Length: 442
Image (cartoon, rainbow, N blue to C red):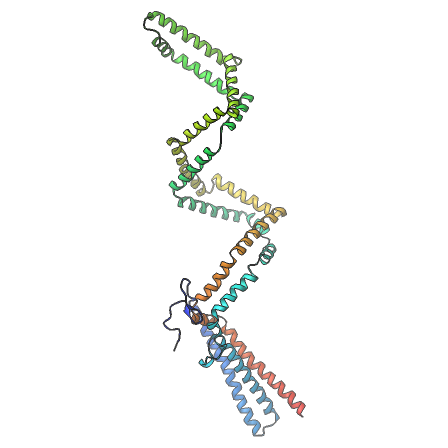
């Protein structure tokens, strides 16, 4: 009776019930290989039967006085039987108890499956996941040079660019706008609040004034002020007349308004046309003083920081920061989808340039090889225990009978050659021993 019948997957001899890892399934392909093993078993067994028949006939012939040759044949056949039986026992003991008899140290794979898994995990950890082995192997591969040769091919650069574009589109599609907007808004706000901008603004303003770059702005403001005064003469006069005392005659108010307007227009016109106008000098002095205060005056710097915080915290500014992500994402996705977009063309050109450098620059190759080695060593040294335990736990989860049958299906055919070779080698050894013994006896 099959002693594993009715057991759950992952439950078998030597391991007990295990859950959480898939059973080592016995597939139709394994069954086909097992049929090949059975054919080899029949051949090896047939050879054993053949030498047994030869032994019987040779022994009969020897006793019947057939001649010395019968002794030689009988000795060879007898040794062939011994070799065949010994190797049959050894091969069978790997997978099951020979003839169903529970002889110690038989059915090794079903009974020692868990220990074999643990030993396999330890073997892999010690011989494949050690720092020296990983570094030596990667160094011999020459990752940097090979990567450079591969990337320098235009077709390969196109492929990598396409894959990166697909990954970028997928990542941007998966990300939720609300989450990214919240992160971006918080990052910008935190960065703005943590960095004092007054000194930087002061230094920038000082440089702008020192280089005279602000004069174009002053020219523009003066020109616009002049044009506005020309277009709004009535508004200026009405404003002046409206601010006059009620007891003054209207013609006096009009006279004053007209004078104020003309003086104001003259002043702005002179300021617009005269680069050395006193007002321009006053503006220069104000800007220089303000730039100095931004860098050194505590009160001015504090007021700028308060203004910055108030500005950043305003709902309108936060909405602009949040909405910027949607625009950026749309732009990036559109560029990633377009084969001729500047983004993809630049990415392709960068990959080709990187490949060409990697293929020829030994220093860069050495750097890349070092990075790859360090990364691989970090992974194997940090997670070696997890990797080896995965091997041992996976083997332990396999059903013992299925494991034995599957392994036998894969290597059983070669193991039957051991039986065949044992029969042949045993027969030759028996013949040699008989010949030597007979020669010495003669």
